[in-house]
Length: 339
Ligand SMILES: [Mn+2]
Image 1 (spheres, rainbow, N blue to C red):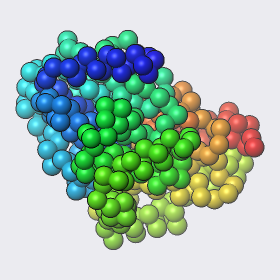
Image 2 (spheres, rainbow, N blue to C red):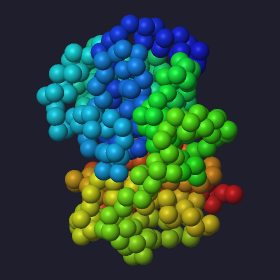
Image 3 (tube, rainbow, N blue to C red):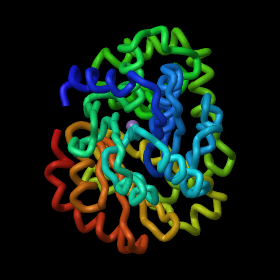
């Protein structure tokens, strides 16, 4: 959808106060929470009634974010969430474009016959089910798009909460501006946000300097004992099974960021983190340059995402998961060793 058309339609949708539910994806990350909170706070300023809902818990290091204590967790509070969804006039879906990313909410969402809007930066969106869509893949994050929407409405809508939430989304989705920066735009937007946020340094500390001792030791174990480097494929794989995670008293969010470390080796083009949670194997893929982990995750791991960052899941054992990954590598060898 053309950007101008989106703004026309969004303008109409925001015209009169409505009951909204703002929703983001399963295993919410900083951008999911940041964009949902910033957008919901903007809607509230326009006089709308808003609930924010995610399928399951988000990591503790995001709990301090302004408004995070009001986020409803669908798996913990299903009846209340279903009631709010039944009463809603509009849905805003942020930071995902595939129904399966809504987890257990998927069926309920599919059954609702109400208008929905989509704001997202993942690849291959299906535009048909939406009233309006703002989807760009060459932006840092959904939070950047939300900030752009708010700035378009007028800088006077920005306040400390909105600016802080949007900054968290941008900072986390770019790994502190180490990737997914496509041009100067993200910095112009951040400059505006930083004018309104309390302190950028403090935001960075609140997000990153929050490890428990167990989490840091898990990172050490993952790199020291569980990282397999496959020089022939410019690939590194880290796997952590349930028993290993439990031995470090795993908490949600503890494996966040581990997948990025192997890429800091010059020779590595793709890093994969494979973890076992609740009987499901989760894959987190990262790459440098043109190798598309989105294509790999979409073709073989029931997932997708971005060219350089993607996820997926398989219902199998850790052994089978690693075996499948190893088996596929020769097929991608030429692409992995390019440039
Ligand atoms: Mn995102």
